[in-house]
Length: 233
Image (tube, rainbow, N blue to C red):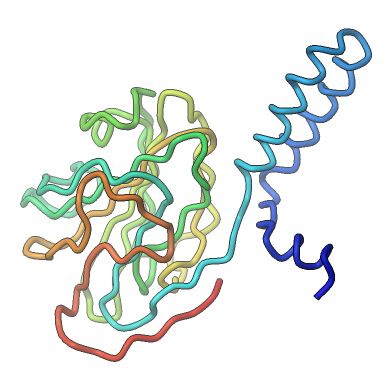
């Protein structure tokens, strides 16, 4: 393999959502170099950060029955039982909630935590509090997917806007079939993702752990020995 091919193989592709931002940053950079060179160098670093932010790397996702994978890159800030927001329609009983906080340096492409079909999509207007706060799950603007697995288990993944994040982008629609680890959307510029799982589900991760979307196993709904299989996507 040539050196150039070796370098390219290590670079993650850019998601199409990022191109307008990258082009905009690049144009501002050129203008600043023309009017004020120090500003141009600052804008150059901002443009490179924008390219990095919108990266969309491939992930190797386990595909065995019952697997629940992380929907987002970032730090796991909460593993606890909580009553899901009423608008999700999951009932008043507490469920296992695993929350992942995405900083502006994490990859922001979100992925489905489970294999299943989207039962419904729920959008809720709200505030833009710091997404790492626990009350962000209830108060912030959010977009939720209620997914029904082949076994009939209902799982919710909630994209939550944050202090800087002001745009939740969805790639999927009502009734769509999903594979575990499939891309479902992104949240621009720092945010949070919550996964709600049935009561009694045992979490396989802990607070403070770093999660990788589509790869880190959060829980096992089957809770039984099984052969492991994987897919790249």
